[in-house]
Each structure stands twice: as C-alpha cells, then as structure tokens.
Amino acid sequence: MIGASAEMFVTLMVLLSAVVLLFVLALGYLFVRNRRREFADATQLCQLILSTSRGRKHGASQAETSQVIRKAQACEIVTTDGVVLRGNYLRTPAPVRLGVIAYCPQFGGDCGDMLDYLGPLLQDGFDVFAFDFRNHGDSDRVPDYSPRAWVTRHELNDLLTVIDYLCDRPDADPQGVALMGVSRGGIAAVCAAVVDPRIWAVATDSVSVSDWLVGHFVRRYMPNVTPLAPLLVRLPRAVFDAYGKLLRCIVARNLGHECLDLAAAIAVVQQPILLIHGKRDRFVPVELAHRLHRTADRRSRLWVVPRAGHCESVYVAPERYRRRLRQFFMRCPQPTARSVAVPADALSSSVAEQSELLPLTSPMCK
Image (cartoon, rainbow, N blue to C red; front, side, top):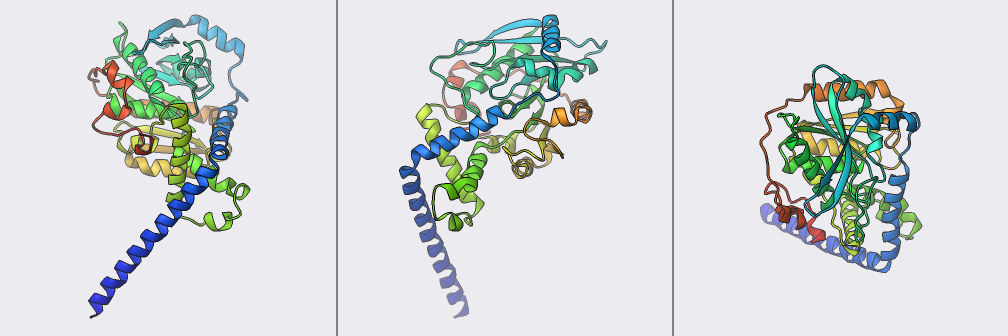
C-alpha cells in the first residue's frame, strides 16, 4: 500500500512539473513574440558593450606596433569560399624556436592587438602569426555578412584556413600550432580545436557562452520590461539559459548566421585550455567563467585576475600574464600533428556535419 502511494505521488509530481513547464514555455513564447524587437535590441546591446569594452590602457603604442609589423612577413590567405584574409608572420629572434602561436583577435579587433598579448612570447622563442577575420582589419569585406559578437561558421572557416596555411609553410612546425584568442577569437579557437588535432593548445581571454550571457542580461534587466520580474527571476538558471538560446537564435535567424556552441565544444575538446578572466568583468561575469571551467573539467585551467575587467588582464598584470602564458605553452605536450583535410563543401554547410564528435550548432537554430 505504501509503495503504491509513493508511486502515485511521484507520478503526480511528474505530471505537475510537466504542466508547470508547459505553462512557463507558453508564457515565454507569448512574452518573446510580443517583445521580439526589444529582445533583439537587448541582444545587440550585449554585443555592443562587448565590442566597445576593448581598450588599450597600457598596451603597445601605435609606433611600437607599426615598427614590429614592418619587420613581419605580410601574408594573404584565401579561404574555401574565396575570401582573402591578411595577416603577419613574425619570427622569434631567439636562437631556438619553441613553437608557433596563432593569434585570434576579438570582435572589432585586428591583428595589431597581437603585440599586447603575445609580444613578450615572441621574444621568449615563439613564432607568432596574427591575422584579421573577414570584415575586420585589412581582410576582405563580405557584403552580405555582418559580423556579431558570437562565432559563426565563417570565423571557424577563416581560422581553419589559417591553420592549413601555417602547417603548409616551408618553415612549418611539425608539432602543429597553438592558439591564443581574445573574447570572440577565443571562442573560435576552442571550436577549431574540436575539429583539428593539429592544434596542440588553446589559451583564451574573456570568453563567454552566448546563451549564458544573453540569459544573464535578460535576468538582470527583466525588471525593465515586465512587472512579473520579482517572480520570474526566481526561476532556475536553466530556464534563463533556454531563454538566452531562444532570443539569440531569433536574432541569428533573422541575420541568417548561426552561432557555434562554446559550451558543447569545450565539453569535448581534448587539447589543454587556459581560461583567463577578469574578476571585475562587468560584461561577462566571472561566475560564467567558473561555470565554463567546470564544463571543461580536467582539460582546462582557470586564472582569475583580481582587479581586471573585460579583456584588461594583460594590462592589469602584464608580467604575470606573460609568465602564465609562457608556462602554459611550455608545459603543454606537443604531439606530432597529423594532417586533416577539411573539405570546402563541409564548411559551407552546417558546421555540425564537419565532425562526428560534436554538433557545434544549436538544434534550436536549425
């Protein structure tokens, strides 16, 4: 009798939970449908504050950057869809080369930012290659593509093309390539590491999962759009993650560009990852960095810089930043990379079809 009562109670609780979930989803659908414009503006606001948060408080001067660039080898690389990417290859002055690192700039940034992040490692013995993503810096502009703060298949295509170029050079490192990415560039680096084993390590600065970030801002600014905010903010975090995914996908679908899923990528990537984040980051809260670190488990290390904001760690603690990066890249194993051919038609279709390991695109965006 007790067992039957317990079973009935569990069944009722499951049914009640299902009803509540359906009610919340229905309420969310109506809310989003009626306020689609506001949510699109909020999502674009998130990307705006991320793009305008970049700065060079104590970085290399324009004269120093120009002097280094003049000594570099200018490169032009053509992607599988015909876009010309431009970058600079800098050789280390050290007698022994320790490896090759490709720099992936943030949204709104360009290859000139490399000197702030990897300039010291160039002196330590690493060759550095910095390039501009499409529609950034000196690379080609694609008229029908408007980049956003999230990573699409276009940025992944650009980065995989860069890795092909670096591995095909006459002076290529047989051990492969390491990546250093800032903000959006770091997301592209992690996603590329999933599908290309020639990448032996990835360091990132101020990266975030788009869905988590949008969900965070929805929860934070909800009192501005609905009187039910005191009740809705008590919903579980997973609800806001789902809202963030839905809102971001609405905007992405309207723009015609899907967003790659950093959380799914970092959960399966096999290479060592260094996550750098500012504790005072007002745009990507540090708790999201801790959550991402837990998702990556043993494959990642997290370094939180106490007094740094978004993309400011290199300026707040430059010597520690250099030491951390150097130690990370020096201690990472560099297995002999095996060449991987990525067909052009695979990159021109859904990114999910490129790898059997990971569906990088969100199912809600299909």
